[in-house]
Length: 156
Image (cartoon, rainbow, N blue to C red; front, side, top):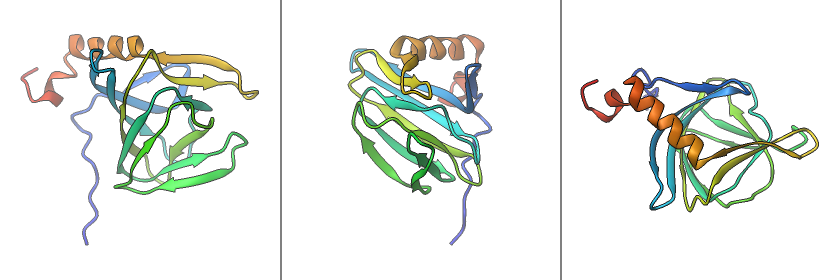
């Protein structure tokens, strides 16, 4: 069986200065239906800051494997390419990261009230939140910079 690599050459990855080891691209923010669709690229053999999901979500691993770590940093679970998982709001705090190659994972966040992700310090205290407004602003920036049009199949 052939192995395929997800072609992300048409995606202009975005990053946040305070959040290392992860890049993202926002596909859609639907405030009426409270859905935010985004794809994340998790750096290989790295962990993203401790966090919890504040809304229900579904994920699809499109490249690599997504590794999960408990709050204490110990390995909890690995999801290989093709894994489709749904998760609840306010689950256990955890870290995520790519395996031996970057992991590319599609997230569809559902029933978003405001916050999607709450980032925590080492003591488990909230230090940063990413909200629907943050993703809406990122999507607007993608559109205004012309990086969104080519993904949608429209001329730039």
